[in-house]
Image (cartoon, rainbow, N blue to C red):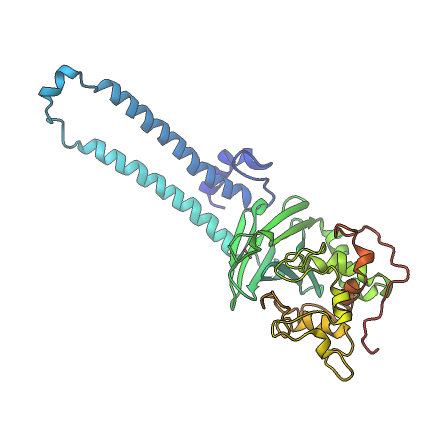
Length: 373
Ligand code: CUA
């Protein structure tokens, strides 16, 4: 950090570490400097606002013309004053020069991640976030677990439209663009959970495109990621439905409700009954039943769910649009099994209102996926 940056930070950034009137909580190494620049500019604005209003009021009183003087009003006021004009040019020039320096300094620091950064691959899609940890072979959804006190670099891309990743507590934001990578980095300074937003309007459920950044101390981070890496391999078949509800459903939640309400996609409530009975109607007027008989594509009805996850635009349910992205390559075979089992056992996993039940009773749950093992 430059001398000037240090100055702005120590003088103006101090009051901001716990969040203040203007700023949310701050929890990254770059936050104090960014807040410093903000407060620096803001304080200049306060000062000149007060100065201009004070002079305005003073002039209004001092040069107020009495009614008797109106007829003799002349315009022989001075037309210029070189020292005054030089002063009011030089001072703002100096100030914007300092603002540029502070801004550029922070921008450069934010642009280049430290060499030893921990890397996470981010995929944005309408309307969810997926975070892949190549070091552990782990994929997280709607939750990003990162180590405390270590720089983290996000390499981001979008599978559909323009999104923007924003973590206010870290003071970092960058566009996420289809067909190319963008990146940003941060180093978290406080353990805890922080909100991650999409900050670019990306369609109907933009406001639901949320995630949580989970900052853990290094040893807890290693343990947690290690556990996530083995999670769906280690888990008993019996527990797969609950695993899908707790760990995978958050990727579906913005479009598929659990309470029967129609969203961007059909509700998951009753989906298995509609599938099993073949009552689902598609946009071309055909019904699922047409594909279900012996030798049909969905002779094993579980395959319809599997196909809907991997080739979501293949069959579109009536009254819905073809907006779902594919999850091919994002879900492991066993995770797809878990999703199928979640839908088959949904009644055991949610209550009447469609809220997930904690520690559901899964004894006697249907754990056949229809797949040949
Ligand atoms: Cu994604 Cu807004």
